[in-house]
Amino acid sequence: MSLLISPHAIVTDLPLTFVDVETTGLHIEQGDRVCEVALLKVYRGQEVMRWSSLVHPGRAMSPRATAINGITDQMLATAPRFEHLVSTLRPLLRDTVFIAHNAQFDVRFLRHEFNLAQQALPQLAVVDTVALAQAWYRFPHNSLQAIAESFGLSNMVRHRALADVLTTWQIWQRFIAEREVTGPPTLTHVMHPHDRRSAAELELLTTTMRTALDTCQQLFLRYKAGNAEETQRMVLPLELQYEWGHAYLRAYCHMRQGERHFRLDRIVELELCRDHPTLGT
Image 1: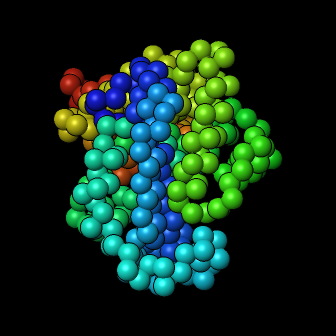
Image 2: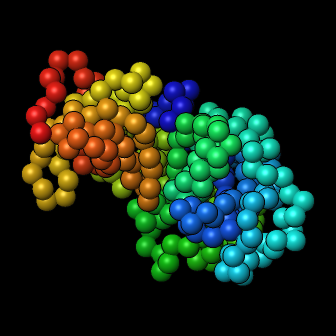
Protein backbone atom coordinates (compact mmCIF):
# COMPACT_ATOMS: atom_id res chain seq x y z
CA MET A 1 0.00 0.00 0.00
CA SER A 2 1.25 3.48 -0.74
CA LEU A 3 2.34 5.27 2.41
CA LEU A 4 0.32 8.26 1.20
CA ILE A 5 -2.90 6.28 1.65
CA SER A 6 -3.93 5.79 5.27
CA PRO A 7 -5.59 2.47 6.15
CA HIS A 8 -7.79 4.50 8.55
CA ALA A 9 -9.25 6.61 5.73
CA ILE A 10 -12.89 6.37 4.74
CA VAL A 11 -12.63 4.60 1.40
CA THR A 12 -15.19 6.81 -0.32
CA ASP A 13 -12.98 9.83 0.42
CA LEU A 14 -10.01 8.30 -1.41
CA PRO A 15 -9.04 8.41 -5.10
CA LEU A 16 -10.17 5.11 -6.64
CA THR A 17 -8.98 3.52 -9.87
CA PHE A 18 -11.06 0.71 -11.37
CA VAL A 19 -8.94 -1.52 -13.59
CA ASP A 20 -9.44 -4.37 -16.02
CA VAL A 21 -7.09 -6.17 -18.39
CA GLU A 22 -7.88 -8.52 -21.24
CA THR A 23 -5.25 -11.11 -22.12
CA THR A 24 -4.24 -13.57 -24.82
CA GLY A 25 -4.92 -16.41 -22.39
CA LEU A 26 -4.89 -17.24 -18.69
CA HIS A 27 -1.34 -18.45 -18.13
CA ILE A 28 1.63 -16.14 -17.72
CA GLU A 29 3.94 -19.15 -17.47
CA GLN A 30 2.84 -20.19 -20.98
CA GLY A 31 3.63 -16.77 -22.41
CA ASP A 32 0.22 -15.11 -22.25
CA ARG A 33 0.25 -11.33 -22.34
CA VAL A 34 -2.02 -8.33 -21.86
CA CYS A 35 -3.88 -7.31 -25.03
CA GLU A 36 -6.11 -4.56 -23.61
CA VAL A 37 -6.14 -2.42 -20.48
CA ALA A 38 -8.66 0.09 -19.16
CA LEU A 39 -8.78 2.38 -16.13
CA LEU A 40 -11.52 4.52 -14.65
CA LYS A 41 -10.53 7.08 -12.02
CA VAL A 42 -13.18 8.13 -9.51
CA TYR A 43 -13.02 10.62 -6.65
CA ARG A 44 -15.82 11.01 -4.10
CA GLY A 45 -18.31 9.29 -6.34
CA GLN A 46 -17.54 11.30 -9.46
CA GLU A 47 -15.75 10.08 -12.55
CA VAL A 48 -12.47 11.95 -13.05
CA MET A 49 -11.22 10.28 -16.20
CA ARG A 50 -11.34 7.09 -18.21
CA TRP A 51 -8.58 5.61 -20.34
CA SER A 52 -8.24 2.43 -22.38
CA SER A 53 -5.99 1.01 -25.05
CA LEU A 54 -5.51 -2.16 -27.02
CA VAL A 55 -2.01 -3.56 -26.48
CA HIS A 56 0.09 -5.45 -28.99
CA PRO A 57 0.97 -8.61 -27.03
CA GLY A 58 3.86 -9.78 -29.20
CA ARG A 59 2.11 -13.11 -29.75
CA ALA A 60 -1.06 -14.43 -31.37
CA MET A 61 -4.40 -14.40 -29.61
CA SER A 62 -5.60 -17.82 -28.55
CA PRO A 63 -8.89 -18.87 -30.16
CA ARG A 64 -10.42 -19.29 -26.70
CA ALA A 65 -9.46 -15.76 -25.64
CA THR A 66 -10.82 -14.27 -28.87
CA ALA A 67 -14.07 -16.18 -28.37
CA ILE A 68 -14.41 -14.59 -24.94
CA ASN A 69 -13.31 -10.99 -25.51
CA GLY A 70 -13.73 -10.62 -29.27
CA ILE A 71 -10.22 -9.22 -29.70
CA THR A 72 -8.49 -10.46 -32.85
CA ASP A 73 -4.92 -10.35 -34.12
CA GLN A 74 -6.05 -7.90 -36.81
CA MET A 75 -7.35 -5.48 -34.17
CA LEU A 76 -3.98 -5.61 -32.38
CA ALA A 77 -1.76 -5.23 -35.44
CA THR A 78 -1.18 -1.48 -35.00
CA ALA A 79 -1.69 -1.29 -31.22
CA PRO A 80 1.16 0.00 -29.02
CA ARG A 81 3.27 -2.46 -27.08
CA PHE A 82 2.95 -2.41 -23.31
CA GLU A 83 6.37 -0.88 -22.73
CA HIS A 84 5.21 2.20 -24.63
CA LEU A 85 2.25 2.58 -22.24
CA VAL A 86 4.16 2.34 -18.96
CA SER A 87 4.80 6.08 -18.75
CA THR A 88 1.04 6.64 -19.06
CA LEU A 89 -0.03 3.88 -16.69
CA ARG A 90 2.42 4.50 -13.86
CA PRO A 91 1.01 7.89 -12.72
CA LEU A 92 -2.56 6.60 -13.13
CA LEU A 93 -1.88 3.72 -10.71
CA ARG A 94 0.21 5.63 -8.17
CA ASP A 95 -1.32 6.76 -4.84
CA THR A 96 -4.78 5.41 -5.53
CA VAL A 97 -6.90 2.47 -4.46
CA PHE A 98 -6.75 -0.24 -7.14
CA ILE A 99 -10.16 -1.90 -7.53
CA ALA A 100 -10.83 -4.84 -9.85
CA HIS A 101 -13.02 -7.91 -10.12
CA ASN A 102 -10.76 -10.89 -9.43
CA ALA A 103 -8.01 -8.36 -8.77
CA GLN A 104 -5.21 -10.90 -8.32
CA PHE A 105 -5.51 -11.78 -12.03
CA ASP A 106 -5.14 -8.16 -13.15
CA VAL A 107 -2.33 -7.42 -10.69
CA ARG A 108 -0.35 -10.51 -11.74
CA PHE A 109 -0.55 -9.66 -15.42
CA LEU A 110 0.23 -5.97 -14.87
CA ARG A 111 3.22 -6.83 -12.65
CA HIS A 112 4.47 -9.23 -15.32
CA GLU A 113 4.14 -6.61 -18.05
CA PHE A 114 5.89 -3.97 -15.96
CA ASN A 115 8.70 -6.45 -15.25
CA LEU A 116 9.09 -7.23 -18.95
CA ALA A 117 9.38 -3.49 -19.55
CA GLN A 118 12.10 -3.44 -16.83
CA GLN A 119 9.91 -1.28 -14.62
CA ALA A 120 8.35 -1.88 -11.21
CA LEU A 121 4.60 -1.85 -10.77
CA PRO A 122 3.74 0.89 -8.25
CA GLN A 123 2.84 -0.26 -4.74
CA LEU A 124 -0.88 -0.87 -4.73
CA ALA A 125 -3.68 -0.75 -2.18
CA VAL A 126 -5.78 -3.52 -3.74
CA VAL A 127 -9.51 -4.12 -3.33
CA ASP A 128 -11.09 -7.17 -4.96
CA THR A 129 -14.83 -6.98 -5.64
CA VAL A 130 -14.95 -10.79 -5.87
CA ALA A 131 -13.74 -10.95 -2.26
CA LEU A 132 -16.32 -8.36 -1.22
CA ALA A 133 -19.03 -10.43 -2.90
CA GLN A 134 -17.85 -13.57 -1.09
CA ALA A 135 -17.63 -11.85 2.30
CA TRP A 136 -20.78 -9.72 2.17
CA TYR A 137 -23.24 -11.57 -0.09
CA ARG A 138 -24.39 -14.98 -1.27
CA PHE A 139 -24.75 -14.62 -5.03
CA PRO A 140 -25.46 -17.78 -7.06
CA HIS A 141 -22.21 -17.04 -8.88
CA ASN A 142 -19.57 -14.38 -8.25
CA SER A 143 -18.71 -13.59 -11.86
CA LEU A 144 -18.93 -9.94 -12.86
CA GLN A 145 -21.86 -10.59 -15.17
CA ALA A 146 -23.80 -12.67 -12.63
CA ILE A 147 -23.47 -10.01 -9.92
CA ALA A 148 -24.44 -7.27 -12.37
CA GLU A 149 -27.53 -9.21 -13.39
CA SER A 150 -28.44 -9.79 -9.72
CA PHE A 151 -28.43 -6.02 -9.25
CA GLY A 152 -30.31 -5.40 -12.49
CA LEU A 153 -27.31 -3.74 -14.12
CA SER A 154 -26.73 -4.05 -17.83
CA ASN A 155 -23.45 -4.49 -19.70
CA MET A 156 -24.01 -4.77 -23.42
CA VAL A 157 -20.32 -5.33 -24.23
CA ARG A 158 -19.00 -8.19 -22.14
CA HIS A 159 -15.33 -8.99 -21.59
CA ARG A 160 -13.93 -5.79 -23.08
CA ALA A 161 -11.77 -3.92 -20.63
CA LEU A 162 -13.57 -0.56 -20.44
CA ALA A 163 -17.05 -2.11 -20.34
CA ASP A 164 -15.99 -4.41 -17.49
CA VAL A 165 -14.42 -1.49 -15.63
CA LEU A 166 -17.67 0.49 -15.83
CA THR A 167 -19.63 -2.53 -14.62
CA THR A 168 -17.21 -3.00 -11.70
CA TRP A 169 -17.74 0.63 -10.70
CA GLN A 170 -21.52 0.16 -10.74
CA ILE A 171 -21.24 -2.96 -8.58
CA TRP A 172 -18.86 -1.17 -6.20
CA GLN A 173 -21.37 1.65 -5.75
CA ARG A 174 -24.08 -0.82 -4.80
CA PHE A 175 -21.77 -2.69 -2.42
CA ILE A 176 -20.68 0.47 -0.62
CA ALA A 177 -24.14 2.04 -0.47
CA GLU A 178 -25.49 -1.05 1.28
CA ARG A 179 -22.45 -1.25 3.57
CA GLU A 180 -22.68 2.40 4.64
CA VAL A 181 -25.92 1.64 6.47
CA THR A 182 -23.78 0.37 9.35
CA GLY A 183 -21.18 3.12 9.05
CA PRO A 184 -18.67 4.34 6.48
CA PRO A 185 -16.16 1.58 5.59
CA THR A 186 -12.47 2.32 5.89
CA LEU A 187 -9.82 1.21 3.44
CA THR A 188 -8.91 -1.59 5.83
CA HIS A 189 -12.48 -2.90 5.82
CA VAL A 190 -12.60 -3.29 2.04
CA MET A 191 -9.04 -4.56 1.61
CA HIS A 192 -9.52 -7.36 4.16
CA PRO A 193 -13.22 -8.25 4.11
CA HIS A 194 -12.68 -11.83 5.33
CA ASP A 195 -10.63 -10.88 8.39
CA ARG A 196 -12.73 -10.68 11.56
CA ARG A 197 -10.30 -8.66 13.64
CA SER A 198 -10.97 -5.05 14.47
CA ALA A 199 -10.03 -2.34 12.02
CA ALA A 200 -7.49 -1.01 14.52
CA GLU A 201 -5.72 -4.39 14.74
CA LEU A 202 -5.63 -4.76 10.96
CA GLU A 203 -4.38 -1.24 10.47
CA LEU A 204 -1.54 -1.85 12.93
CA LEU A 205 -0.54 -5.10 11.21
CA THR A 206 -0.58 -3.67 7.70
CA THR A 207 1.24 -0.51 8.75
CA THR A 208 3.96 -2.60 10.45
CA MET A 209 4.32 -4.77 7.34
CA ARG A 210 4.55 -1.75 5.10
CA THR A 211 7.21 -0.16 7.32
CA ALA A 212 9.26 -3.37 7.29
CA LEU A 213 9.01 -3.61 3.50
CA ASP A 214 10.00 0.00 2.96
CA THR A 215 12.93 -0.12 5.39
CA CYS A 216 14.07 -3.71 4.69
CA GLN A 217 13.68 -4.64 8.36
CA GLN A 218 13.06 -8.18 9.50
CA LEU A 219 9.85 -9.12 11.27
CA PHE A 220 9.14 -11.34 14.24
CA LEU A 221 5.78 -13.07 14.01
CA ARG A 222 3.69 -15.71 15.69
CA TYR A 223 1.79 -17.69 13.09
CA LYS A 224 -0.98 -20.27 13.23
CA ALA A 225 -1.81 -21.92 9.91
CA GLY A 226 -5.18 -23.67 9.91
CA ASN A 227 -5.25 -26.44 12.53
CA ALA A 228 -1.47 -26.51 12.86
CA GLU A 229 0.35 -25.56 16.04
CA GLU A 230 1.39 -21.96 16.47
CA THR A 231 4.98 -21.24 15.43
CA GLN A 232 7.33 -18.31 15.95
CA ARG A 233 9.14 -17.01 12.89
CA MET A 234 11.78 -14.49 11.98
CA VAL A 235 11.21 -13.38 8.40
CA LEU A 236 12.56 -10.93 5.87
CA PRO A 237 9.52 -9.42 4.13
CA LEU A 238 9.58 -9.29 0.33
CA GLU A 239 6.09 -8.34 -0.82
CA LEU A 240 2.52 -7.87 0.38
CA GLN A 241 0.07 -9.59 -1.95
CA TYR A 242 -3.72 -9.75 -2.14
CA GLU A 243 -5.71 -12.70 -3.44
CA TRP A 244 -9.41 -13.42 -2.99
CA GLY A 245 -9.75 -10.85 -0.23
CA HIS A 246 -6.85 -12.18 1.82
CA ALA A 247 -3.53 -10.42 2.31
CA TYR A 248 -0.38 -12.52 2.14
CA LEU A 249 3.08 -11.54 3.24
CA ARG A 250 5.67 -13.13 0.96
CA ALA A 251 8.84 -13.39 2.99
CA TYR A 252 12.05 -15.31 3.46
CA CYS A 253 11.49 -17.48 6.53
CA HIS A 254 14.61 -18.28 8.57
CA MET A 255 12.82 -21.19 10.22
CA ARG A 256 12.06 -22.90 6.89
CA GLN A 257 15.11 -21.47 5.10
CA GLY A 258 13.08 -20.44 2.09
CA GLU A 259 10.31 -18.21 0.84
CA ARG A 260 6.89 -18.64 2.40
CA HIS A 261 3.51 -16.92 2.19
CA PHE A 262 1.89 -15.87 5.48
CA ARG A 263 -1.81 -15.11 5.40
CA LEU A 264 -2.60 -11.97 7.35
CA ASP A 265 -5.56 -13.37 9.28
CA ARG A 266 -3.36 -16.21 10.56
CA ILE A 267 -0.67 -13.93 11.96
CA VAL A 268 -1.26 -13.84 15.72
CA GLU A 269 1.43 -11.27 16.52
CA LEU A 270 3.73 -9.18 14.37
CA GLU A 271 6.44 -6.67 15.22
CA LEU A 272 9.52 -5.11 13.76
CA CYS A 273 12.61 -7.12 14.62
CA ARG A 274 14.72 -5.37 17.20
CA ASP A 275 15.31 -7.62 20.21
CA HIS A 276 14.39 -11.09 18.90
CA PRO A 277 17.31 -13.35 18.00
CA THR A 278 17.09 -15.43 14.83
CA LEU A 279 14.89 -18.39 15.70
CA GLY A 280 16.21 -21.91 15.24
CA THR A 281 15.00 -24.27 12.57
